[in-house]
Amino acid sequence: MKNNILMLTVSLVLITVGCTPSETIIIDTQPVSENFIGHGVEWSAYPHGDSPDAEWGYLMTDEKLEMVYKRLDYMKPRIARVMDVAGWRYFKGVDSKGDPILDFNCPEVQMVCKILDYCQRNGIVVLLGDYGVPGFWGYPGNIDRVDDPRFIEMTTQYISFLVKEKGFSCIKYYIITNEPNGDWACTRGDWDQWKKGVEMMAEAFANEKLDITMAAPDVVELSNNHKSKYTGWQWVEQSVKQLDHLTGVYNVHCYADYQFIRSGAFMKHYAAVGETIRPTGKPMIFGEIGGWYHTLELGGEYKKRMQSTEFASEDSQLFVYDYLYGVDMADMLIQTMKAGWHGASAWMLDDAMHTIGDLGDKNQLKVWGFWNSLGTELIGDPRHEEIRPWFFTWSLMSRYFTPGMKIYNPTQAEPLNRLRVVAGSSETGSTIAIVNADEVDHTFNLKMNVHGESDLDMYDYVESGYKTDENSFPVPIDKVTAKKVKQGFTITIPARSFKLLTNTSIN
Image 1: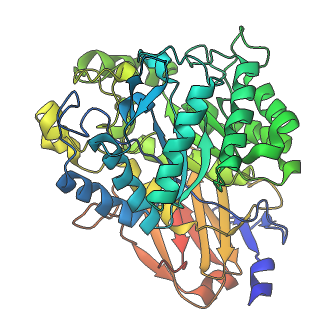
Image 2: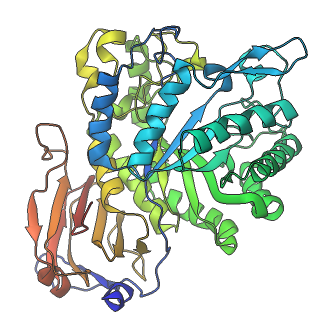
Image 3: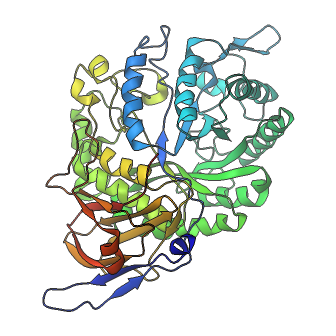
């Protein structure tokens, strides 16, 4: 059966009215990537509503979390980027000698443990990290640098507590600070400070016998800080050159304008960035990924929405309420896979997690999520707690492209404009994802030597409607026999839509 996986074949044949097929594309037997990690989410531990002393009080109750868990049970995120600030959790200031005062048994840490417990139970790989050192967030003690030995020591103690005492072996990677190349970061683009901090933290983990490696560099790769010695891309290159011996996963962020996505330029750019990393043999992921609508007619609509949405901060994506965001985010995911990357986590899971500057202002929410768990409490409208359209496409991509899959591309470019196809296969089955980013429908013949004999479920995400159940979870519209897919069959995908076929079994 393993030979069937290696001999994966997909043919796309262009069909025109009154014409026989004129184009055939076959996916090569050589995968574009192996040991796929999978897609997931950015999941912060609700710093404004995690305890009685939080800005909003203890609003993220166990009942609220159960709603989140139920939805994630369907999505099955394979990775979770869990970022935090020590002062939000266990750092309680410094003593008279300037040494950190730590409390790992407080309610704030208990909230983190609830998230990690879910990840542990469900086999989710966790990238744990800090949004910045305590001094950056205004906490006392002048712990202002990531290479401060006090920051290294207290972080190591905290992670040792989570791993050794609480048993959270799901924590596989550590991020020393968020987006260190940015002028908004606690490092403000200081490569030398960041590098030294990474080296010190890795040494401290080794001394503590923590089986955790570094996720680097966690930069916004398309952003260039003129005060930094390196561009965003060069931060990736230099991480490979100088820190590969400490790095377990390479991790970048991207927020792409919709034109960059729909044109396919995103895939070309990150295929090139990936070539910088590929010789290491290490996995490469997008720790944060999202789309923007800042240009042309959609840019004008975006500005109107910002002006009329009282509870949203300037750092918001107000198209999360719209069908189109589901297509564009699926398009980004497919392009990451076609470019050889091993996974991506969506920014972000839940609007209830962050506010601008994380000051807790209810009228300055970061609206990016699949829902707002506290829509009733914060906005006075329970409709904001409902699942939004882009959950449909993201959850299918996360659920059915499983860890360990080999990912395959056509050997030639797809013959139809802005049509993108990617396939994955393993002993659990095969999955095919298709996005049509064009403004016209496309019809083609699809042929794949899928793994196994089980029928494939077909899911459609189209603007005229998409099928969900009573929980707003995706429902297939049809089934296709494996025999039919292996022999080849005609398929139509409407303009600006997404389709997924799968016989991958899910535990």
